[in-house]
Image 1 (cartoon, helix red, strand yellow):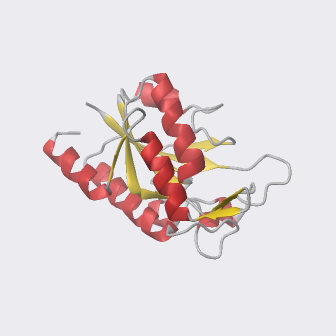
Image 2 (tube, one colour; image 1 turned 90 degrees about the vertical axis):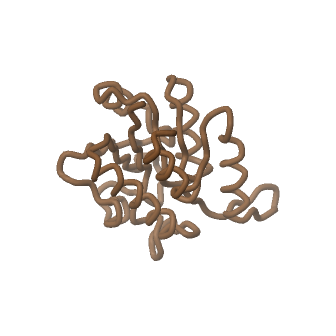
Image 3 (tube, rainbow, N blue to C red; image 1 turned 30 degrees about the vertical axis):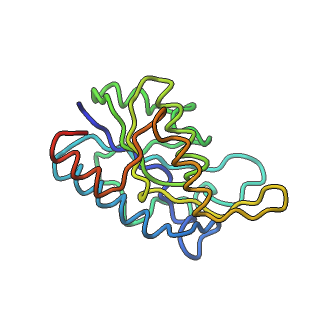
Length: 187
C-alpha cells in the first residue's frame, strides 16, 4: 500500500516564543522529523501543509511573517510540495487531494498540529475522501483549551482527540510503532 506522509502546520508560531506556542511542540516536531527522514531515505511521497492566516483578526501564521514559516526541523527539500491552506482542513480549497492521487497514494500518515483542530479536520476529511489514515500521536500536539470556565490541559485535549480518531477514522500509533510497522510491511 503506497503511503504518503502529510506534515500539517509544523510552523514557527507554534514553537517556544511564537505567537501561538503549543505544549511540547519540539517533541512532536522531532517525531515528525523521524518520519520525514524515513520517507526521504526511501523516496516515499511526502507533503508539507502550511497554514497562512487570511481571516480578519488572525494573530498567528500571518502572511509574510517569520512565524508562518515551516520550522527548520522539517524544512521542505526542493521537490517536496508545500500545500498552502487557509482553513483547518488541509483538503479544503487546496490541491492536496489532487497531488495524492497523482502520486498514487492510497494511505496517509498524518502528523503536526494542532491535534484538536487541523489534525482532526484533515484526518476526518481524508476518511470522507476514502483515504485510510495513520496518525503519529506523538508527532502531533496542541495547547490548553477552556470550555465553560474549565481549563483543559493540552494532554487531555490531545488524548480526547486521538481517542476520537482512533478506530473509525484512523489507526493512532506512536512514531516508533509506525516506523516498525512500515519497515515490516504491516502498515
